Length: 497
Image (cartoon, rainbow, N blue to C red; front, side, top):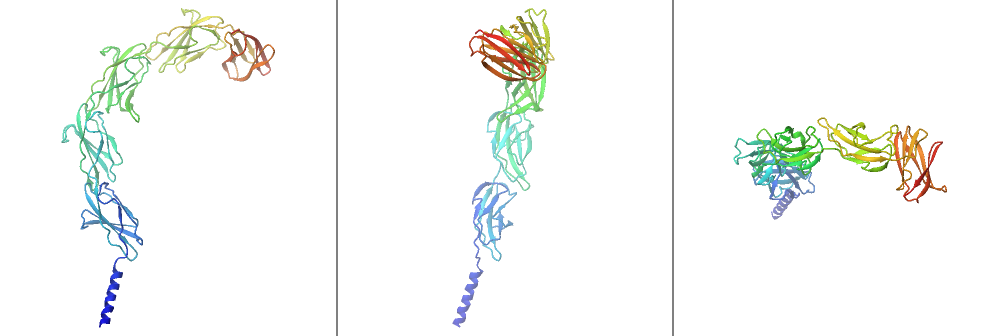
């Protein structure tokens, strides 16, 4: 009898040992136990269990898992979706083997974020645009955000606005607001199964005034086509007004600008507009007012500027001597110009002046070799500019004196002029008027036949001015030789520095 009883006890213990689970339950890792502000699409993660082929997950709103959602995965991670805002969740995992499974692990808990956090505008922010920029901390696993803005903390005034923002965004501009008002902003997040609490309310003040940017107050010599710039206010449109008196009663012009003229950079937002061409030599006063369907801003402080009255000539500088009879005249270019007019004469009265009409996209004019200026003559020149609306005053008069060339000779199909001679500063100019493209060799020799300079030049059809600097050589007689193919010109020059 004792032997039978002992055998039964052994069988019971053997059965107990081998009926117990031999797999260890998983260890939960993410989210940490008690983690807060988790997203509605919370990511779950746990340590792998040896021998496990899959895992079963339970997620519940109660710690006893009386009602739970069950999931199965072959991985050691799982992403939940559409969890309820502002809720506490419990979760646990068990490992499943081929013929065995572990116990449920010790349950963990985490808390789903309750609402959105507004980052901008900060409370009490002032001078906010009437399309207010606001920013918030992102919440993932949602459908969209809803915002409400109103002048009443109950969000029930006639100025109440609301809209939705896509789930991928973390900032937005509001619908149009009114100027100079105290506003309140709140937000919440949504997905198909839950809506978050409303965020804490942020308050801000829309702007009262804004600033002009360009042209700066008291600017002089502004171009007739001038870009106007001012602060962006968030408005749908702006009206800027110009006049030639500070009371805006004379030559008043008003323009309406829409939001397509807004320029945004990484650090600034401005509005830019270009009016019709202005008059030369006028003082203008200007101001801007912003509007939308709800309201209009105050007008800006009035600024003034003056447009350019006349052109600025550059070269040859007034009083220059030794200028080639085929000179190039240069001036300061103006934008927005129709044409330039040039007058040049041997008399300062310009009674017998030659007139030239020059296109607007250039800042120089070169006389042609076929019609050179007279040698050893003083010349006077002036210019003016035209637009579709006006003509400038004549520029200041510049004068220069042409040189006496050694002579205009032919080498191949090229006319050559060498000047000045003698040279008082060591510089010799060679003016070549080419009728075709070719190569010309230029060399300089001293009295004993030593070559002190030699260079090949590729000459294209048209005028070419080559300047040789011989200042490092002693005064005396030299010879310049030009060779083009079989054609050679040799001329004597004198350095007299």
